[in-house]
Amino acid sequence: MQKKVVCLMGTGHCGSTLLDLVIGSHSAVFSLGEFHAIYRTMQNLQGDSPRICVVCQGECEFWNKRASLTVLNTYYSRKTKLNALVGKLARYVYNPYQFIFKWSQKPVVVDSSKNPWWFRSQFTPAYARKGIEQYLIYVCRDGRAVVNSYLRKYPEKGVVAITESWKKQVLSMNKFYEQFPSDKKIKVHYEVLAQDPEGTIRAVCDHIGVEFESQMLRYWEHEHHHIFGNAGTNRMIVKFREQQAASAETNKEWMAKHGDFFDNQYYENQGLAIKLDERWKTEFMSENLEIFESIAGELNRPFVVDTTTL
Ligand SMILES: [Zn+2]
Image (cartoon, rainbow, N blue to C red):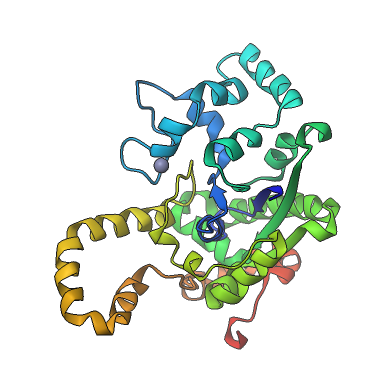
């Protein structure tokens, strides 16, 4: 199969970790999480089993065993200016994603670094990406929800600064999206993904040329080795594994008795399923909404989805 890198682009709190986990649950796909954090990670590596993966508790099967930290260090260490230069030159000879294909044994790699500058620099120069098809997914979410989410986390920053920063990110992402080849890019709205996961994931699979697998939607049951990403979404996976381990025995007994009603198990797990988060509608105060509108209202129009008609 053709080697492919799927780049997920979006602002913070846009739902890209969720989409990443679902695509990464496909049998032909390996997901990196936010690969750009590798710079920081390589800087902080210490001891015999340095922590790279945010999903695995303790030693990570993928990053600590299969992947070569020495190779990654060549590409991504920024300890000294010389290290940074060596990394840049290395990219001119061999694309770093080639190692991920080799280590993961999967033909499709997802990178949800979100930043256009990162994707640009990983695929420059053009000849170093020979043999790799690059796809772009622009994960869109209503700016009001994003700004409200930041405001909840960093109230001290204030609505003006957060909205300005959202605007700046969106302008640069729009520019990157416009110049990207039209047959290799799509937009996914978080609100549509949350309301219609199957339909959305089918469209994404079509776009990147892999066959839809219904088990992808139960992303928490699959193996993931993310470098970085939305802590809440990743924590759900950890939580699920802990629950599974704790209740494995009880589940076995229960299933023996209630095997005919196997679906009950499914409903129990719905607590982890994809849900639309629209807290901003009640949390975002009207004066903040007015400020947002005056700074970024126009820019936000294409991001607005009427969720009542979905
Ligand atoms: Zn791991």
